Image (cartoon, rainbow, N blue to C red; front, side, top):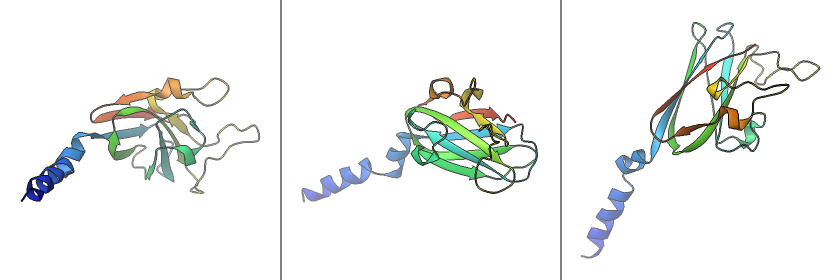
Length: 143
């Protein structure tokens, strides 16, 4: 009989309602896209390590299509914390950000807080934002 209250307590602790209270939804709207061709790729980082160039070190990756020069990506189950976003418009559909001979992007890029780098990509500290409830970010792509 002692097992029943323990099982009930455990089921309440790990119920979907309890879990969702600990995480949030992050909605990212990307605007200023040159065309509806291609895909927008987004990397969500929870530390400066790898930001913004090493997607393999990102906390979460996502992508979506473009409609009327705009793309919306919704990320669910995001734990409370500090994050930064890097995204790019893969206009030619080759699955990567194309750069010129000097390493300057030939396709559109963007970052949370619309952070821009000086002589290079933006820094994590300029793009960081805090998630502690459902959050929105608007990013304008730069070409």
